[in-house]
Image 1 (cartoon, rainbow, N blue to C red):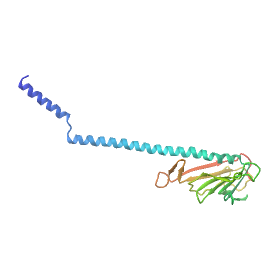
Image 2: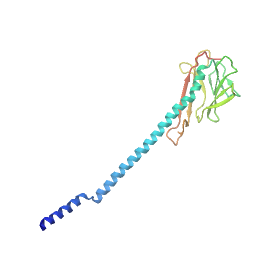
Image 3: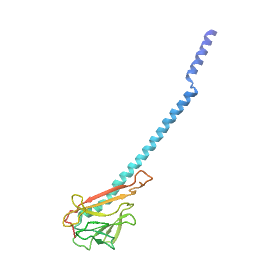
Image 4: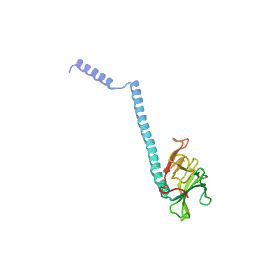
Length: 210
């Protein structure tokens, strides 16, 4: 190889090395694009975790609360005698026939013996719905974190409040929660939701009224 060829070879090698290198603007653009892609990936992952938490909470609230309220549904359907009223196991007062059947307590007799009964009542001071069974004299918690008016109502087939208990009615109860209890997840003003709601309409399968 002569001297001229060797010089040309060196210039070609230096030119190729120049093509392989990045200039400062190119490097800055590359770093910026990489940073955006990395941030988008992390954000997408965090968004997915957040959505997964919400879905799990909703499914848990639906499934477990449905299981908890199945007992109330079965009790209402099995009731041979029921009374709408106000109070708790120590102070239950039934609402007279001929007046609007709206109250904070629902008394269910599964047999013709009115001394044996189940009482669902709202503890409005604590925001709770409880179930009391006369045979055991035990009161158990059904729902908590309630924030609505907390009442039962008897309705006709049109959804109007009943006053006449001689006709079969529908027992309506609506529960509004300010916090998930299945599992516990806050849903207040500082979170994603103001509240969530469960509403039940159940018809006794036997004639109503005392």
